[in-house]
Length: 166
Image (cartoon, rainbow, N blue to C red; front, side):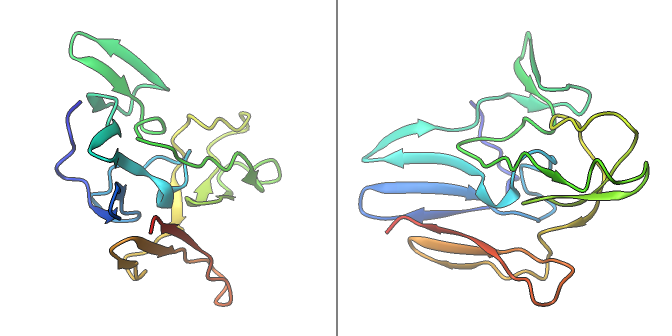
């Protein structure tokens, strides 16, 4: 499959493994959907010289609900256009209680807006009113480890996602 050259990413490596991670929150991040945690997108994995996976779709189309095929190959919707093992926190915190136009929290993504009274759908691209990741966030990295801090409304909350392959 084609690599996305505009994706903001970093690599972590040890003597036998190399992991490419898409960086969360940047304008050029590959994954901007509201289904999966933005901090855990693994773009590719190489172990002892063998590439185990990479990008599986040809392009992303916002009109696609999940994914489909055409003559160019696989087309993914915005909430499916992601690579590697990723985390989906299935709880949409506060969705049921939110009024139409109100907000709810999707862990790993941010504060999202409820567009209608329809049941929560993880494949729907919800409008984000605030992201867990900010351009002010500092991603701390060394050769084989990285922390991606998430920002929350509470000044006391500062959880982060950590990757360590060394």
